[in-house]
View 1 (cartoon, one colour):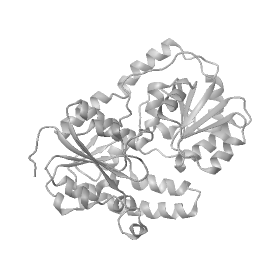
View 2: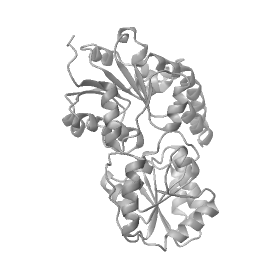
View 3: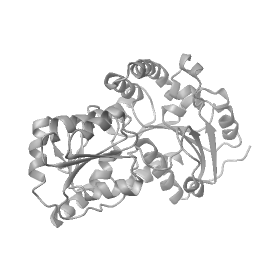
Amino acid sequence: MRNTSDNHIHIVSFDVPCPVNYGGVIDVFFKLKALVERGFKVHFHCFEYGREHSERLEALCVETHYYKRDMSLGNLFSKKPFIVTSRISEDLIKDLLKDDYPILLEGLHTCGVLLDPRMEGRKIFVRAHNLEHEYYRYLADTEKSLRKRVFLKIEARKLRKFEPILAKATGIFAISNKDYDYFKQFYNNVYLIPAYAGFDKVDVLEGQGDFVLYHGKLDVSENYNAAEFLIKNVFKGTDIKLKIAGMNPPSHLVRCAAAEPNVELIENPEDDDLQDLIRNAHINILVTTQSTGLKLKLLNALFNGRYCVVNDKMVEGLDINDLCVVANTADEIKIVVADLMTKPFVEEQVAIRKSRMDAFYNSSRATDRLVELLG
């Protein structure tokens, strides 16, 4: 076994974090990048199930290991959550046992490591990306497919029973104030480390765009339901252009968007294309019916977009300090959107965004705290 050396760390990820194109992997990748920039030597481990090996990732790390996620049906019958059992790997454990460097587990998904008695005594931190049992219960309630709904409900129960494994962790890094308050009720050594979005300065265009943008991972019920709500209840029958962009939209959303002449669905945009959409939209609109976590797409819109319209759930527990316009019902959103589309985003508003964003979110301060804890 190699001896502990300054600034060496293992990071175990639930997925390959490149391309950096959905919420969870955005936090993984840019947290990794921030640690490397602070001098950490990262030994990276990730599970693969559809995403290719990444040269961009490998260039940042001392070493990069990929493990096949075990998607066999037998894992569905385990008492442990499927997202955990499918990521339990003897090869991973053997690689972690080659030294005694600290370990950062990304998500409850990778906490099968904490079950292994060979890991006792190791310095192991967990990045809690969500209140997973709440998130899966919500997904079950909003899922259209009966088969998926049954799976999600069972998984939610398993996740709630599995969560106490976090008591074995050296520290838990909560991603939002709400999650911090929840975990603090049950576990010691809980710390707030806000989400990493990859942005450290406001880069907003002045002027006026001619469309509204909604973006998200569209194969997730939370997002496709929000998109359909906007199409059917807010933009239907208006002359305001709505663009919806995201990964893997289901067929019912494709049909819903195609039925409205003022709605454009942009499937699986490249990272740069999505950023162009966010920057050039006159309004980024972000609505949700679930408030767990800090939505990374909110940070993206605030750092790079003009007006940002949200509902209460999107910013619950956050002091948004007038960074967003809040509207909840379809009628409220219609009124706000129609009003903002007539108003250019001016130089003074860009300056206000810059000053308020530094108080709202500062990744450098988050990294200072993370480095202190990992050390």
